[in-house]
Every structure is written in C-alpha cells, then in structure tokens.
Image 1 (cartoon, helix red, strand yellow):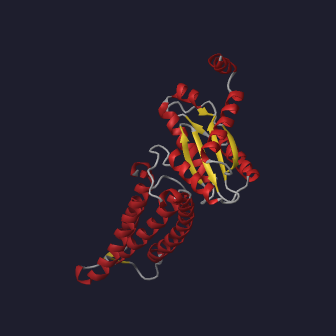
Image 2: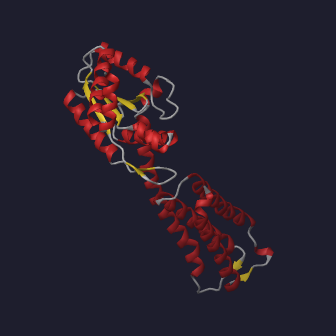
Length: 307
C-alpha cells in the first residue's frame, strides 16, 4: 500500500531536509555543552511517533480525501516537532522569526488539517458501523456466512421466516431479487467476474437497507430480503428502489475494463403464509418475470424444453 503513496512520503522527506538545510545554513550550531538532552529526547520522540503514525495511515488506507487529510496533518505535526528538534542544535539570530513559523506554524496547520481528516474518518466509520449493523441479526446468532457474499444462506432465511410467521408479527414482508441474465455474464466474462458482480450487488443492496432488514443470498444470483414493520405496498416500493439502485451500479470487468450493465427483477409480498409456500410463490413470480424478459432465442429454447 505504501507504494501508492510514494509522492506524499517523498514530499514529507523533502520538507524535513529543507528544514535541516535552513537551520544549518542560517543558524549557528550550539556546542554540545548547551544541548538539553531531555528536550531533544521528548521532541524527537514526538517527531518519530508522528512519522510512525503517518506510515500506519498510508500503509492501511487507499488514496482519497480522508487519507490525504490524515497524512497531511500528521506530516505537519512531524515537521513542527522536527523544527523543535533542530532548534535544540542551532541558534537563530534574534529578530528572525522564520524558525518560529516552522515550529509553531506547521504544528498548528497540522493540527487543523488532522482535525478535518478525523471528522471525515468519523463519517466513514459511521457508514461502516451502519453497514455492519445491517448484518447484526446474522452476527447475533453466530451463523456461517456465505463465503462469497458474507450473507446468510437460504436455511437461515427459512428459519427467520418461520419465527416471524409463528410470531404473527404485523407488517412483515419478504422481497426476492434476481439478477437478469446472470448466466450470460458468467459465460461472456467468466465465473470470477460473475463472483465480483455478486459482491458488488451485495454491497449496493446493503447500502440501501435498514439495520433491521435481513439480506440473504438465497441461491446463486438470487437474493432475499426480510423487512420487518413493512407492509406489502411499502415492500414493493422498497424492491423497486433496490432495483433502481442496482441499475445505477457502474460495474466494469476487471480484465477488459468493459462496463457490464446490471439489472434485477423482483417479487414481494407480506409474510402471511407458510414459509415454504411463500418462498415457492415468490420464486414462481420471479421465474415468470424471467421468461418474459429472456431474449427471444432463449424463450424459444425454454418453450421447446417445456414441450
């Protein structure tokens, strides 16, 4: 990861070198008897720790605004502390204030930039926390994840449907979504690209669901969403919102970079029937929609198989 941040590291190193050249060329070296070892040790440790934190940030985050702000703030703190260290070794003539600007100015600027970076980082963490809370129902029961999407499987969905049905919870609905012509994507781009697409669709769905909603990978390219406190009309509206969200996904093949258009079809209804019957009806509804959306040659082949 550090390789992608070579320029910021080079700039920080170059600035530290410029600081040293300024103090060495415009100042007078202090004799060793005037060195204050405790001050040197404390100020050096601050500079080293700021540099270490800078390396941690750059080695663990991708490039972006938040990373730039965090790194820039830490670099400012490091350079301010480095100027304090150099001030212990060189005497600057009275009446000159550039050394104070380097010491205090870069430190204050670093604190301000770092504070902005922490605000953006906090916003990121809130989004991540919300994302994880949407899986809380799964975490709480310690169920195994689907290794590809990290979602619950069909068995877990059936168990949750049974619980909701027996509880007689009002306004609980189930959505089923299926990726259109997913087998063609696997055929044209390969299974690995199909797996990447499933992961992208999973993230898009999670971002558009509430923390109380349960998203499962029902089978293959089919997803199910259990939405409590949602009637049938609201469930259909949510399903259509998810359809539009997935349609807005800009997915590109990893090797060729070619854009892949993604769309889903859906079915939705209230959890007011036996779970097995409910799942059967929703799957049939999706199959009917698949037949109406399939290309003409595939519909002909499907009709021939049915005959």
